[in-house]
Image (cartoon, rainbow, N blue to C red; front, side, top):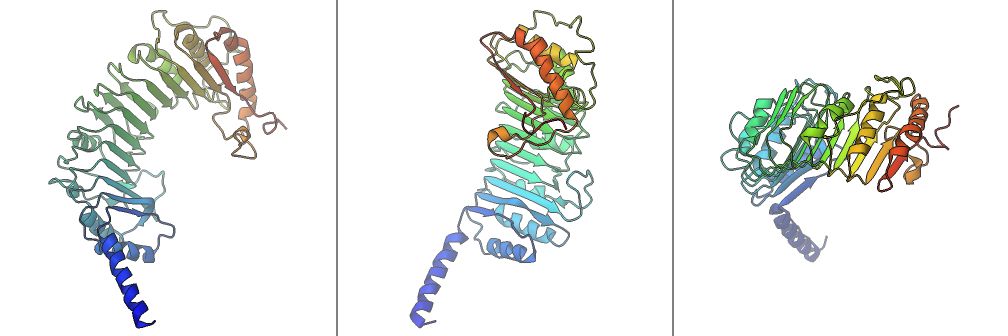
Length: 391
């Protein structure tokens, strides 16, 4: 290379290095997670000044084993400073199945990094597939979103995190098997969204946050203590028993509900229905007390709608006692991908569900359609006449 070109390249190289040494947002997308990638990330972070880092994100997850633990610790030590606002750490394990509840080979997140003011500017914390065991109150006073997926943490440890997270607006817990009880303290005045899915050891969800407006959960046999959820506008439930809960608890617990989504596998399964079909017992439909009315509910969607008598009763109750209802969506296909959207050439097969899906359509035509007022739009997702043809 000529001397002039070499000098020019050196200047550009120094300028580029100076630029990224102080770059505030570090995002790593992992395509081939091998040792070379580890070394590249290590080189970048160790040559970063550490000043002014606002975001560190491993978007596709980083593979973890005993040899990478040292690197993760050192990277977090560099990046987690009082200025950091977002940390996304997705861990993938070579040895552990995603849906396994064992945590023997998990990365242990160093919680001490978030103490002594180092987490004071943190606004978004996302951890996946690791252990998170805070033993001290973490200083996360500006945290607005906490998302834990496949994380080993206990209910008490979660409470330790929440106790000082006064600014928290969104809390998402997915597949966190170590939690038995989730207690949302009343000091979380800004919490508006709570999501809890498949935390299989969970027994109780107790909410005292006064402004919770959206609650999505999917877990069976959990005691829900929602208190007076006067601000709740959106509720999504997907677990066996959701229909029973909707019938028994919704009228008094969430009087200002606007959007309700129900999914209840097994309880109203098309393949093995746990309730008697409306066609087996269409007489004497049960009715709830008339004083249980929803004056704000505008949209209701039931996925996996079938001919279960209890589901017909719930739908009739909603139509009779919801004066503000605008849209009722009944999906008889369990929400499978459809060719009608244009995204797929063919609908996802529904197999044995086809027979019950057709019965569900007949139940809607027989018992539901005549009760739908002119002000309500009824949308029924039926089996596809082209793809879902019984052979």
